[in-house]
Length: 281
Image 1 (cartoon, rainbow, N blue to C red):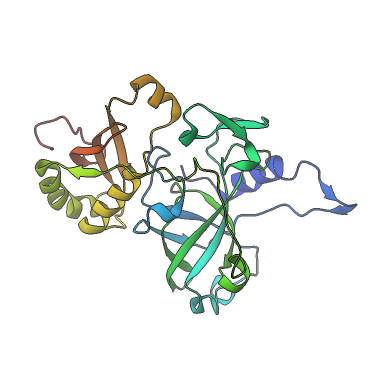
Image 2: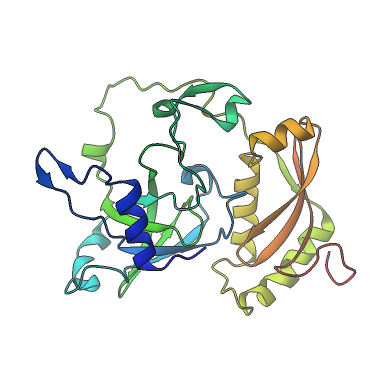
């Protein structure tokens, strides 16, 4: 999923800046400041919003800044803030999006205007995430509450300032009634719980460095699965009655049964192993 920096620059120049200029002035080519490493290595079960997975950890290394821009100097002072905005490119869309209406997953087949959603399938496939800043190590920013697939190119980060970014005191905020459905209860079978304790140390030593310990991995799985990650086509095919899904998070492959009423985590294995074999549970 990781894209080379020059590929990201080309993609952004093609998808975002096709006009070439703005009000007569040349528009510079956008260049990612880095690619993010998260505990989500595939699109399925990557949360649609970071607020639903506060325990999901990530690292953003500023390794593609313009020549001559020192990452450590650019990050100076950011440690004073608790949260930051990430502006990122939806690099895994797979096809162009030129529709006025989209099918939001929580609408279960209903359509609404693309600008009434946060769908990544839009004219300029850019996303915006509010995440928690956990620390800074040299040229790397440590984050949590992240809703991005590992390898996503990040275009910019900005500090979150409540006095400016939150609505004015006394303002009335409203959202569409379909946006925030009730969470699904999530349970782990005894076998899955035991496997989590055994597999977490092994996964952290595998070819995929683990970001999460066993407790954080469990809470991240619970938070992600409670938000019902099923895409619309799977929900339609399975009829809402429940089916087994494979979820990959932080080097661990999870098999879970998801239905409209609840989620049950059945088995876990180190990624690239078979959850159905006798050596994993």
